Image 1 (cartoon, rainbow, N blue to C red):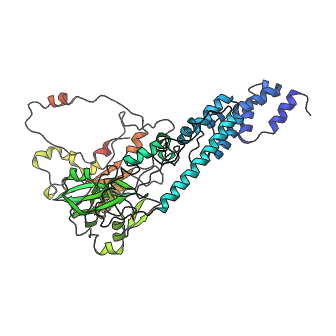
Image 2 (spheres, one colour; image 1 turned 120 degrees about the vertical axis):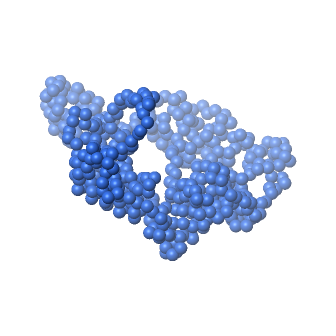
Length: 503
């Protein structure tokens, strides 16, 4: 329709929208060849905007393709779809198809005569995959038909294995000999393959992909002989008893005694877990969850280093806590806990002091030895910020970094009251001001040795995006050398010391 190159380029320009139009407008006058050659203009558009929708090239998607838990027929359809667009030769496609198959199917294909073409190889893989799945279905059906012992944690005594049974899936010596003579698989008893390539040896779950573990834990502590041991307890509704790791028992010196009779433990597939039995348990321990929830609780000893303490279904049924699964928090306790387990926070001993207040001597007077430095102890002057100097501290953020969002820390009643006093005092002094910015730093308290509370601000998030300013620090021996020969030492606690640093 258009014969001139400039007209074709102008028409193509009129069809562009959004980001493509913005880009073309920017380069239209910068590059004169765009107006003179349609092929050049179209080539630049393809160079800038022609990329896969999902961000991956066909070759990359073909290399990452895996069968996983899908049937071989579905995997072959995906493979042929990508192979048709890749432009690869037959040898390369053959190798990639074989790599993407399930390992059990790869082992089975290795026992068969090699196909003469890729199509024959794909058809053989589909046929063997179908036979494997039919065999697994028959094995599972026969296993489900056999009577199985009930999974129970109550009062099972330790049961010895059958005399002719070696392990969970092994065979007796006589069974091995008979199956060997008949050239049957030692593992499943079916002909056509040997034990190293048995389909039952390989898991049926997909080997590609990521695993997702969502654990719900609560802060807890054990109290023994005036000592407190903080732990993290996993809440598991699938556990029939409360468990504790044997390493934790040894570390804390928790007394244990034999469990008679031993409790049999099994997993979800009714197979023994660990040693198969719980043979030891602890005495009743004072167990605390959170700040005010106390109880006497015993645990069964097991080997679980990843989760050293597990609160099972009996604990959940007894306390019936309200758990917010969306936020991952234990929101409140049941009415039973309000009457028995929860202790009144007011009745528990708690010493507090005013937060970062001035040190006041008896009667409000300084000792006579410090009267010459009375101005240094002035609370009014300490409330004013220092003037700006050339050595003011600068907080430079990393390029393209944004200030972090703050965390909300739960506080007890005494700490909440101390926080309100601290905020009122800092607002009055002008050290802080109200803000609606989403950027913030967490605020919490740390106890002092004298029973007071020290306010702490969590600046770790800000430090992570701040440009480092390394500078040399004086050697400790050099600093101590200056004190050589001194006999009298004075310890000074600077009032509002952090507020003396100008930003």
